[in-house]
Structures are given as structure tokens and as C-alpha cells.
Length: 311
Image (cartoon, rainbow, N blue to C red; front, side):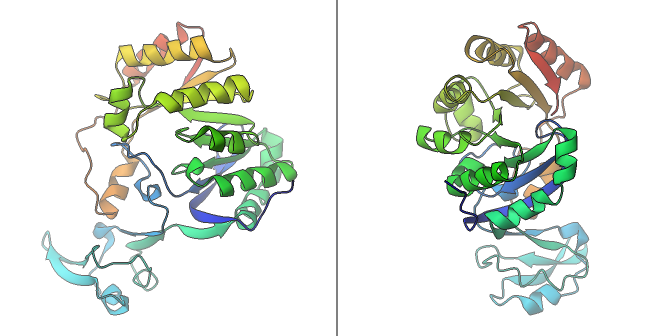
């Protein structure tokens, strides 16, 4: 069956020349919509499926063009921190983007556009030479691409039809039916494990991890897809020796010997994004030291597992 290239979803970024979403040079397609709510989320603009307004107040000059263009009268100019800047009443705003187009300071943008499979694939095909020569390919990420399985399945199918290797970066929180649909077209599974303790996982992400762990085993053992386990390493949340040891033990006991573990140190790139969306977040999380990351790496390596920091 050929891919249906007319299927659509909301895409918030297509990033080229990626080297951290699988082997080689890759093009990563980021889709919107995620069932998890990680307290440390680096891409909060990916949580909702719809396009969203992002406003960077430090760029705003208070010129008032956004006020003039807003059809819902959701934007006002007011004094903030000694300067006049725009303020958006998000209870009225419908994320239409009318305020974005004439902003001279580029303080406003809409995250996400409705895109069909062919349009996304065309962006990938533009770099096919680099993908082929580097041993890379296309990765679908998010958000959570399993939350839009029809689009993800058909984009993966279409990539294979064009001779492009595929990878999926996912929290793997989905039904077995969705897992089978999507991962039958995947060459490499990049599977996140946020925490091994189910209660802690639910506390930090909003969902439990029982089905996630079952899905990872199924993908690797039954569907025979190679797996890289990715652990976002968040100080004070999941970076204890006990949790990292539990991850390594899970991999060692349940997955094939070619499975690798990628420890992803927390970074602050999501903080300005959260602010631009009007979200609150935990500002107390520290960036882990190189020494601490290397210590955690040694724990995983003690199980004979290929381990890297980042990737």
C-alpha cells in the first residue's frame, strides 16, 4: 500500500543538518501535540496540536501595530518593568496570527502550521544527498508523533518509498495498535525514559510509565527495531544513581545487545519559550555538571551498555 501524502497535521519546525536525532546528518520533522506534560519541557510550544502565539516581551518596542491588527482586541500596550510593551489577553486571543505579520521587532510568532505529508517530505528530499552520504535520514519528533499516528505512519511510508532511512523520537506513550502501525515503518526507535518509578513518572509527566516500558520491549523484541534509550537527565528529578541504575538494568534485561543509552543533560532552552507562551515553570532546576553526567554514564556502562552523553 502506498503512502497517502495528503494527510495533514500541525508541524512546528523542520530542522535540517541535525546530528543529535539519530546517526548521520538528519532532517527532523517536529509535530505538535503531546499527551505528556513534563515539568522540564524544552519544547512547550509542542504540547497543543493547534498553532500558538509566542510573544517575546524583551524584543517588544511598544509600537502598537499588534494592537491595531488584532481582530479580537486581545492586545493592549501597558507599562511593564519601566517600559511600554504589548500585553496579550490569552483568554481572548484565538492564535490567529494577525498580530505577527507587521511586528517590526519580530517579537511575535505563530508556532505551528498545518502541513501535509508531501510538503514535509519535500523539505526532507531537498537534503537527500547529505542524508545518503552521511548515513543519516529523516527523524520524526515532537511533541509526540504517536499522537498523530496517521500523519506519522504515512510520512514514514513516504520516506521509505523515496529511499530515506527513518527514525522516530518518542515518549512511546501510545496504544499497542498505534505502536504497530507506526513502528512497522521505522528503522531506528529513539525512546525516552523519563523515570523508572511509575509514581515519580506520573508526578513529573502526568502519565504512568507501565505501558511505555511494555511498548519499548515490544518495539525491540517483537518488531525487531533497534532502540536507543534517551534519558533527559534532570537534577533533583531523575538523576539519582538509583534511577539511572534502574534504567541500565531495564535495558540489560529486556533489550537487545545493540541498544545504546543517551543521557541528555538538562538545558535552559525551554525557559524563554515557556515565558513566551505565558506558562509558569520550575526555575530552580540546575544544569548538571560534566562530572555528574560522566558519573551517571559510568553507571550505565558498568552493565556493558554503549552509552553517550547527548545524542
